[in-house]
Image (tube, rainbow, N blue to C red; front, side, top):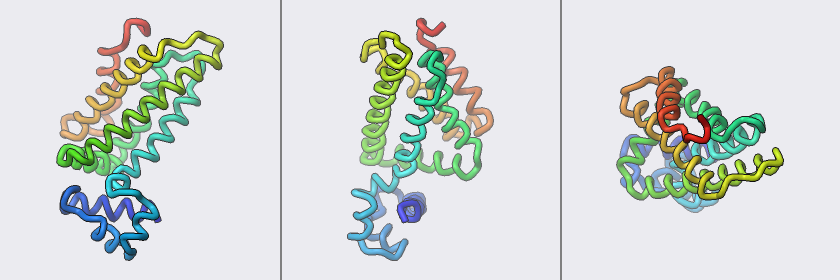
Length: 190
């Protein structure tokens, strides 16, 4: 039911814009009351960002599965292949483009997205600390790992913007992401 609601919300957001779409309209599109909608999502922002929540768990899972001896930068780049693969798929790529258009058009939705992105980055920093402990290494300072993760996400965002603005297509996105991440690779990982 959650995905059905999220898909209906996505269609309405694309047709009317995020801010112009009401929870009542989303609920009506799936044949439920507003009250029932709120059992599945606390807000329309949550419905709009449902795929991001799923992606968060996949990012963390993939990061945990990376080889322990791999450096953090290389691990993050490998995790980002999840987005590269989604952009290479015509349907998923169109959804990503649509979401980014919505983010550009709604400060409220952008704020919710940035909040979730910050939370994901914080969880990824913790995962990197856990992996260092598992290796028996002294973990980098929290500030250094936050900067590394934040820089990697800035690279991902730059590459995605090239995809959503049409300057690269899905299959070329991996190369663009590699270029950006190589250009900004921290000196410690050279």
